[in-house]
Image (cartoon, rainbow, N blue to C red; front, top):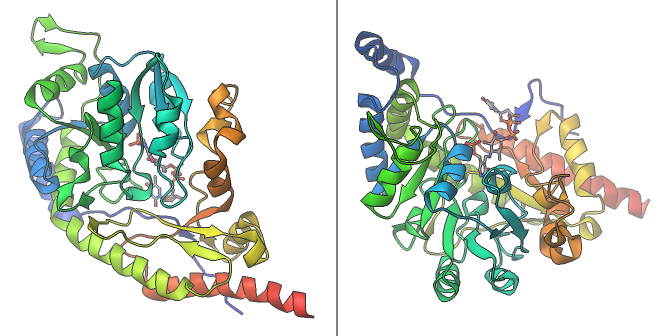
Length: 383
Ligand code: T4K
């Protein structure tokens, strides 16, 4: 019997920099009275971040959703874009806000990323771009997507909201495709409270993106396009600059947690999880498990509720599928029989709590709660 925890454990908890260090930076902002509009912290953070991530050009944003919306504007995407239903709603909403028709294609069953072969099969004369997501930070098949985009003359925009710091064969995952978008929301591996960024391959594209996030201003009197206000302010930039000092430590704690979960969960009938991929530097933004009802004896939702009874608040990211929301469910591509893997995974997944300050004995306790729930089923069966 496992005791219910005194305090709830949530799927995540944000990393915060030491308050004294942040206060020092706040004093500088108070002195300068520059609060936003490409101030000194914005410039320093942008440079430091590009260096840290191993990318050439990066533009800071006030959040990941506005970065996605602006990326589509910057590349002048119209018509139809093929994307995944297995993501956070913001991925598809960014298309909708640009008057672009989303076309959903199915995911592959190994890492739950958009399946390149399903994407190729869904291309029509109206398709202009592909928008895959590196779900849970696991890299998409970037080489195959590059080939498809090149063959059909399509743009490739990666939603890399979960992929901060992820590398593939020593190269940042953000260096693939025409643009990659990051989110620095409080719930992410690296946060600036709210925040985001676009990684561009060249200076010209970065410049256009920087204009677009600042109403379209190229200089005091020139507006090159109907831009938006999506700038990151000085407080967030200073906070981000500080966070960079601590992010490696925080990722290594996440790695230990993921390893510990895998040790504790292996051998529980009906529970599976994702393993690391050779050649990939993972940053462990989420720890998804799949519940196979047949082998586990209970459904994913029954386990989800059992965990909640123990004060453990995992999340069913990404259930329901985006294609099931009212805005999208009438689209022909939203039909469940077009999205067989996505429908199955969305019914089976729970993301367990993972964050740097999660104590190791909590991982044992969470795993034991899952184990005992399964054991109860076995005992009921044999009684
Ligand atoms: N693309 C993808 C693939 C994304 O996953 C996201 C965002 C985006 C684009 C858009 O990026 P942003 O515009 O958000 O930058 C959360 C986040 O709000 C969202 O950023 C994230 N994806 C999504 C996967 O998860 P919720 O509604 O699940 O968050 P919430 O508030 O329920 O938080 C989860 C738990 O975290 C809470 O139970 C407690 C804890 N928490 C949360 C916050 C906000 C804290 O301890 N402190 C906090 O300040 O959406």
